[in-house]
Image 1 (cartoon, rainbow, N blue to C red):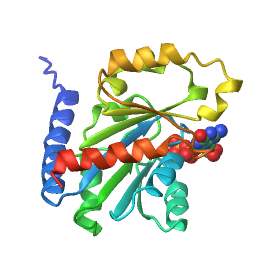
Image 2: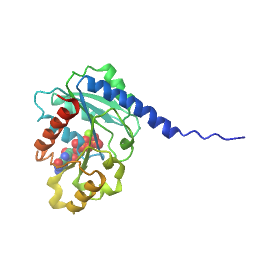
Image 3: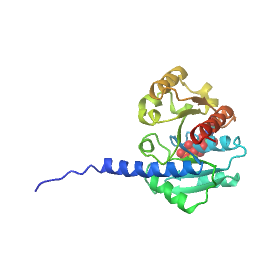
Image 4: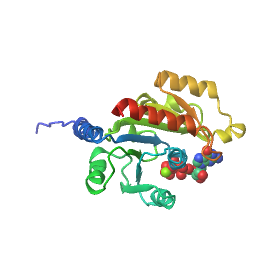
Length: 221
Ligand SMILES: Nc1nc2c(ncn2[C@@H]2O[C@H](COP(=O)(O)OP(=O)(O)OP(=O)(O)O)[C@@H](O)[C@H]2O)c(=O)[nH]1
Ligand SMILES: [Mg+2]
């Protein structure tokens, strides 16, 4: 019997990409900036969002939280008065465009808002899936080690900016900063690097300013 090999991987990526482009166009029309937040489990994606959103004044903000299970992060954000919705992927290691489209169909996100999407915590699968975002931010953290840009190049190659969180832990960990910076510069030349500590609330002013500037540049507002 003759076998036919169907390249499912390509088809899935293509379909996802097409829908991602449609979502991006729709959001652009509504002047909504979509920011895809990526990073390892526990890097500080939610903590960074809290610090960042505190600094975004006069612009409505909505967060979509992606997790395999639970609404822990969504409840944390809602308890701070942040408009947040949960997606549970039930084991899938990344968010994709159909998941985002489903939320956009159901929830009323105001025109002109910034939509932050916290992706599933890992440095592999989320890199390959467009979710209709305008901007990607990879959050790395000091305890993960300074070699991450070299070992997980794809996620760093496709990012618009890199955040290095947990800088307060630098005195306790052998983190080779020049090596990390070189890795970021090689993988994503031109992408800004923001060194922050969500614990100490440092470094977020520059990150917030950069996002506001991206919003102006991309959406012409
Ligand atoms: N020391 C220190 N701890 C931090 C910092 N930022 C976050 N943490 C801690 O790191 C842990 C994980 O933080 P989260 O913000 O939940 O990380 P996350 O990336 O959203 O995690 P997942 O959603 O589970 O992938 C928590 O215990 C935080 O308190 C920081 O800047 N310094
Ligand atoms: Mg989180």
